[in-house]
Image 1 (tube, rainbow over the protein chains, first blue to last red):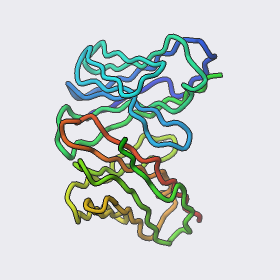
Image 2 (image 1 turned 45 degrees about the vertical axis):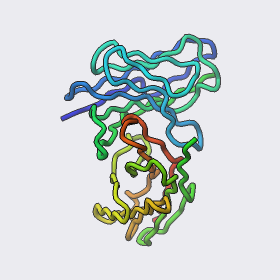
Image 3 (image 1 turned 120 degrees about the vertical axis):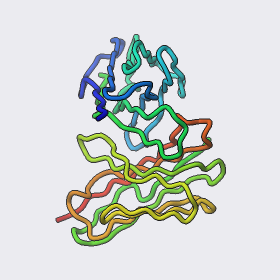
Image 4 (image 1 turned 90 degrees about the vertical axis):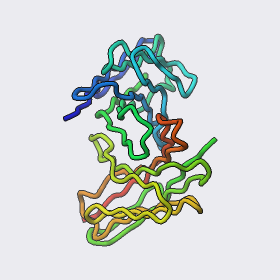
Length: 115
Length: 114
């Protein structure tokens, strides 16, 4: 069966410090991978998605970047965190297909607080 | 900009009562409507994927309906139980060439009072 691991679960970082959140998927190959953020009182906002190694698409211009060094590894990074980067970050994967019933499977999330 | 609206934002329901809430979306470019349940400290989990106008899906005490012409979906919970407490998210999938694209509502937070 497929599993998705995301870490760390919580993180408190000072403004201006770097960020690295990691997500790995097991039990499937060639997944679509996604990074979402939920800001307080809002829905899930798609930040980045990837359809393959080294292929990253950004949905929202921001202080963050993403990389996919391996097929089942997705990393969210920042060189210098801003206060506005605080939020709940979710990694997700789905099958690489446009089928209408393709659901997303989520990691446990990372609560990031920038102080 | 496509917008998916969910109402109410939060809801307190007595255990045993039935309840429902709404997801509204633009009907143009509709491809599919997803419902997810997100329990505290857990990952969001898929409940339903709905594609056809008039669709009705059911899983135990939870059911959902879809009206693509007027752009809304209802989620119903019959005989609420404490374990139903969660945030319920809906997400719109637009035309298939955007297979990565789920546009999410802000969620309805459901709290079941014992």
